[in-house]
Image (cartoon, rainbow over all chains, first blue to last red):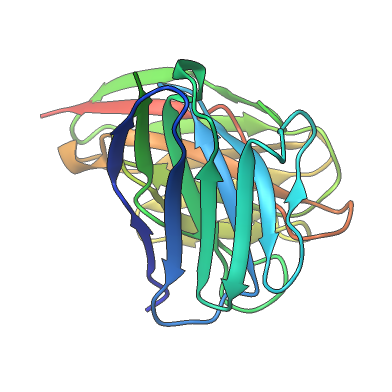
Length: 116
Length: 112
């Protein structure tokens, strides 16, 4: 149980284009989802907390207009990287916990974004 | 990292040996968790220890927590080649909200 599916697993796009990444909770409802970014051989940096039916909460230093988050339903959150640049190339991972509270996170398998 | 540091950054051991990884954090926490990440994949939750607990076991894993020193350790006993992965500690601060903050991670390589 508690499966999180992330799509696509990898994407290559040209500078200036936008890319949408989907994160779905397959067998549970996720009121809150979290988006992380990970550079090679580094830790996960929390980008934003996605709340169903309301605006996302972004961490300091993360541009909300560049990384658009939409959490339209209890099972789907999307991250759109707008006007992508090569420096946006990274590994993006979403996660969710079952139920409310400070519980373990279930992660998607991540999306490798390469901007050329 | 956003929360703390882990050491060692990398660890190479022989199969059958024990592996110990340490984690330090900065703020008061509700709980501390350990995750495993295989290369290029998402993370898998291993174990959670609450702030009022000092030690916890799960199979070959043993986790300790010292809130006075703001540190934790993960011990993997009788390691296997399949344990090769990156291991991250993560904390849920008591600042409110539910966000989970990850440490820098330890890359473990177990040689067969």
